Length: 115
Length: 115
Image 1 (cartoon, rainbow over the protein chains, first blue to last red):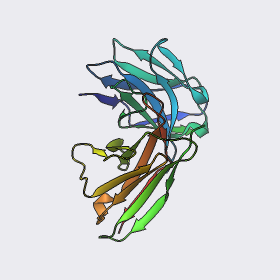
Image 2: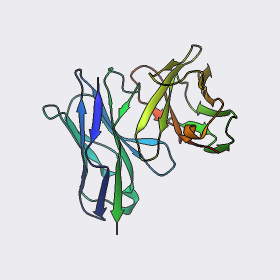
Image 3: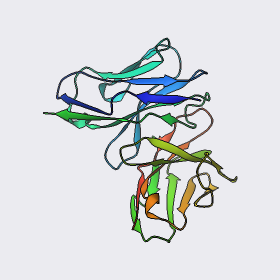
Image 4: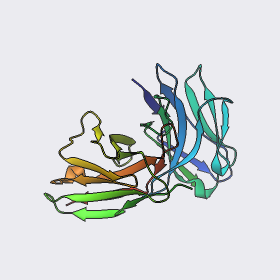
């Protein structure tokens, strides 16, 4: 079975500071990896995804993530956060070779950016 | 872009009544739609996969007689929570894909409160 673990439930950070949101996964097969952002009472918006190729993936809003197969990790980073980045972030995997199909989500990380 | 719209965004219903949530793909035809449930401060859990014109496939532990899913057209899937109880209160989110191995687009979610 596949699983996703987000190691931090809450991450407080000051504005303009760098941030890393950690994600580890477990799977016996190859997976596609995703990061989504959810603003209060809203649906999910795709930040970035890794399907194949370069392990460093750049997404929207200045976020990037690096796929590390040996460590089964897909950590999300941003060099300088803004107040508007305050939201819930979800890491997800799709182990069935279908990037749009059934997604397995982590527990979420609440990013709180303080002035 | 691809837009998925859910309606209503919020609904309050009395215990014992049924409530219907709609998920529409506004600018594309969705071969498959997915329904997720999100408890407060928790991750999204897949409830069922809905293909146009066929019966939905429910995940283990999801009561298909309680959560009725209909995918009558390529742009509309509905989730009906029958005989709702307070424990059914949750945030329900749908996603839709244009085809196999294509990106999933999420609706904005529906917050259901059963009183």
